[in-house]
Image 1 (spheres, helix red, strand yellow):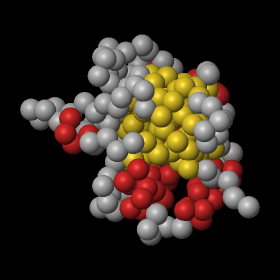
Image 2 (cartoon, one colour):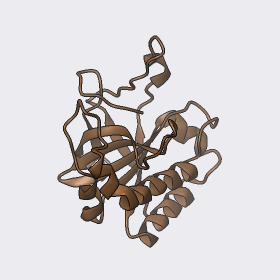
Image 3 (cartoon, one colour):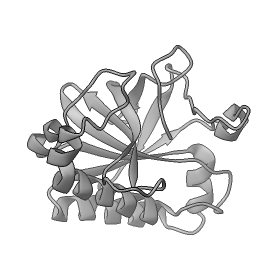
Image 4 (tube, one colour):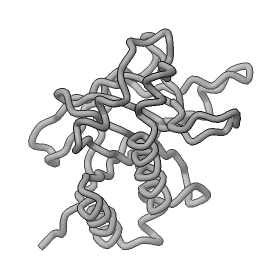
Length: 193
């Protein structure tokens, strides 16, 4: 999914990390950017790149009405893959100025040098409802949290409202947008006692 800076597209999202205690605001910088350079038009690309109080945020978005989509396990692995390629390829991505030219430039090495960016899988409510009929919620949250801990990073699962991205496709062009006033609620990753 790509983003552009106009009034119809996402520029920020309120993240409810603490479950109704307060919000953190992530500023989206860019999106749908390749994390590897090659001639393949279907390159590996990160959905959203942002900043939360100076800390980089990498986000993988999923949207579905049922389980006919990538699983949350796949989404988390995909995000970790993109993060790894970002670490491996930051120098060359910076060398070739890989960012959308109509947006403010940023440096990939800022993500790498931070050492502990926020990694987020965000999906709509229907997606999570469908997949939690297959996966036990606490088990999935704990598995993803454990992967992050083993790799010395953190992965958070978030839920957004049900936005219909397919309705936004016009004349073969697709620029997804999410209302700026949207709040993404965390699906807690730690064990509940």
